[in-house]
Amino acid sequence: MNFTEAELKHAYRLLAPRPTIIVTTESKEGHVNAAPFSFTMPVSINPPLIVFASVQTHHTFKNIEDTKEFVVNIPNEDILSKLWITGEKFPEGVNEIEKAGLTQLDSIKVSPPRIEECLAHLECKVHWIKDSGDHKIVVGEVIHADTAKNILKDGLLDVENIKPVLHLGGVNFVVGDHLRQV
Ligand SMILES: Cc1cc2nc3c(=O)[nH]c(=O)nc-3n(C[C@H](O)[C@H](O)[C@H](O)COP(=O)(O)O)c2cc1C
Image 1 (cartoon, helix red, strand yellow):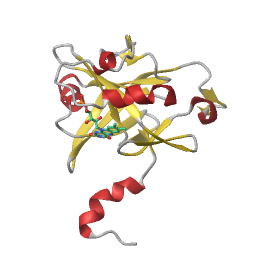
Image 2 (cartoon, helix red, strand yellow):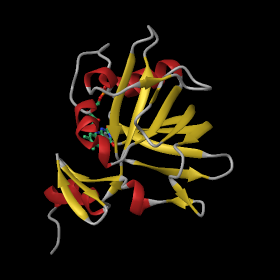
Image 3 (cartoon, rainbow, N blue to C red):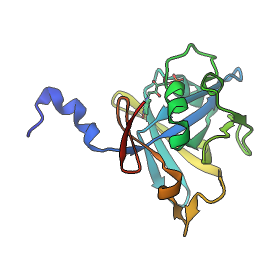
Image 4 (cartoon, helix red, strand yellow):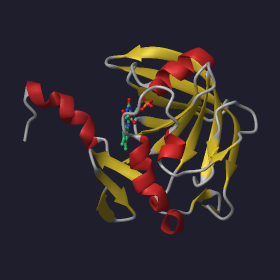
C-alpha cells in the first residue's frame, strides 16, 4: 500500500516501537517538570551524546532552553500508568512527578531531579539545539549516569527481566512481546 501525500505525516509511525523516556527539567524559577518522549536515540558514543525531539511549546523545551540541563529517566512497565500521567497537559509550574505519584531524587551533577522509580538516569547538559520541522532537536551530553542494580546482563539491558516500555503511538505501547494500552 502506498501512503497518499496527506498520509505521509503518519510515516513516522513505521519507526516503532520506540524506546520511551521521561525527561525531567527545571524552570529558571526552580519549578520541576517531567514529560515522556519517544523521539529519542543515542547519537555519539565518545563523547556520549543522546538526542530527543520536542515540540517547541512544551515546558520541557522551554526549561531546557533556559537552563541547558535535563535528565533522561528510563522507565519500565511497573510505572507505565504513571508515565502516562506525566504526559498530560498541566499548567506551567505544575510538578508532574508529584502529580503522577512518583518520587524525586536529587541528581548528582545537574539541577533537575531524577525519578527514583526509573531504572536508570542520564544526567545531561545541552550540546546543541536545532530546528527540525515542527520539533526542536535537543542533543545532550551525558555527564553522569546511574542504573538500578541488575538491569544489565553481560553489559546489555536485561530486557526479559526489566521490561522496558516501547511506544507504538497514541495510547499503545509494547512491553516484551505484548501490546499494552494505557
Ligand atoms: C509515550 C509518549 C511519547 C511522547 N513523545 C513525544 C516526543 O517525542 N516529542 C514531543 O514533543 N512530545 C512527545 N509526547 C508528548 C508530551 O509528552 C506531552 O505533550 C507533554 O504534556 C509535554 O509536557 P511539558 O509541556 O510539561 O513538557 C509524548 C507523549 C507520550 C505519552
